[in-house]
Each structure stands twice: as structure tokens, then as C-alpha cells.
Image 1 (cartoon, helix red, strand yellow):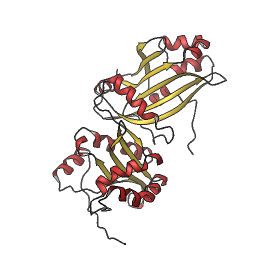
Image 2 (cartoon, rainbow, N blue to C red):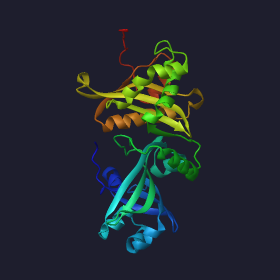
Image 3 (cartoon, helix red, strand yellow):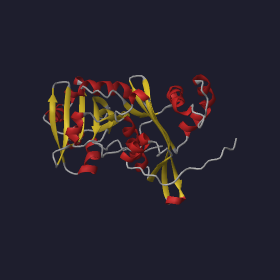
Image 4 (cartoon, rainbow, N blue to C red):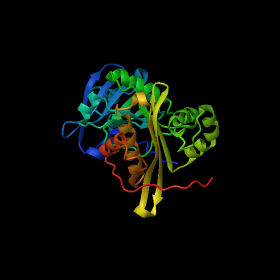
Length: 318
């Protein structure tokens, strides 16, 4: 079980990565604030959209005035000795739209998003809810395992806020997602070289127990790209100790994007997302099996920095 430091602020995460930061409010009203944390080079380290609870804000006048005047939220309460706590609702990966790429000074596709409830005072009153988007160099070791359903609602807010044409987010597969996950996995694994079951419903029934084992396996990471209610791509990776590299290795078992969603940066976002998670878990290398003789496969994986090292040789046991 992961131990949470409820006193750690979002600004603490940004400072750890970038050093000195300053807040800049881009929008302020009685019930909402949009703020950018600026790094010393002028680019943003994070971007936040905060909706206040007016009734609670009125009871903490001094700290709330500092927040509206442009101070960091957690630090405003911390500086006057008011207890402050962050309750994370969901964490997921969101495509870095053009406006964010300009703010973050990057061409990278995925950034991490958190929706957090901010609670203040001895009674932990709900002061505000904030959506935090972190610059791509900031990585979280794993995606949240609870309340991930909130990701869909948050992604809709962000799409409206940025007028995004991406309309997808990346999350960790949960048990409640399993049948939908197996349905998209069937599009890739129905080939004779894999499971080879052409009927989708039969495939789901036959692979259900294996899917449960994968979700419960601490070495396995299953990420899925979701567009509204549809799964449009996924990546399955095993992160395990390996003597041949004297450390951990990430092995990508499957990467699949629906054909009509390809060539839009989604494959790159899934690869980069799993690389960040693997790196945060101590992996030294990512490996995968693909046909580098296929021009499209060669072009894609080479563009991601992958190169051919050796071929896999397999034998069926049953």
C-alpha cells in the first residue's frame, strides 16, 4: 500500500523538477481561478483550473484573499497555520494540446493530470476542487487505482477548456473495464499467431481469467486510451527484474491502435506513457517484439528511439 504525504503540495512536485517557480493567474472570478506556475525560463511547470466552494472560502478570508491575489493555494493556508490537505480523486494521462505545448515549451504528446479536492481547517472542509496539468517532464510512478471514472468527466472539461481535437485520455485498466478491454484486445490477438479465436464473444469468455490475472499481477501495467466511452487503443507491458541487464526491464507485450485512430500521435503517447511509468519503477530498458522488416513498424519504432537487437524464438508448450 502506497503511503501518501497529505502535506505534499502540487507546487512541491513542480519545484522538485524545475526549481524556482512563480504563480501567474490567467483568469479569476468569485468561484473559479486559472493559474500557471512559471519556471525561471518562462515556460510553465503546471497549469491548474480551480473551482472554489464559496461558503467555505468565506470562513477563511485571509488565506482565500491571498489565493485570489495570486498566491499558491496550499502555501497560502500553510503560511497562516491552517491545516491543508489534498485528496486525489483521479490521475490520468491527457494529450498535450497546442496551447499547453506552447505554455510548457514542449512538443511531447502526453502530460499527467490530477483532479484534487482541497480540504482546509481542523474539520477538513471542502474548500475547492482543482484540475492540475503537469508539464511532460514530471512523471508519476503509477496511475491512481481508485476513482478513475472521474477521468472521463475531467477530460471533457479539459477538452472544452482547450477546444481540443484530441478527445482522448489514457488510464490504467480496472476490473470493471475488463470485458471492454478484452474486446479491443481481440482486434489484435485474434490473429493465428496469437490466441487465434476469431469470434469476439468466445475470445472474451476464454480469456477472462487471464485478464483478471493480468490486472492482479503487480508486474503488469495495462494502459488504455479512451475516447468518450470507447477504448481506441491499449498497451500491455510487463515490468520485471532481469539478470541480463542487472535490474528491471519493461517488456511491451502488445500495442494496438484502432486503424481509424492511427497516425494521430496516440501510439507515441502510449509508448511514452509506459516509458515514464517503467522509469519511475526503476526499469533500465524497454524491449518489445515487432516486425522491423515492415516499413510502417520500422518507421514508427525508430522514431520512438527503438532499434533492432535480436529476434524472439518461441516454442508452444500446449
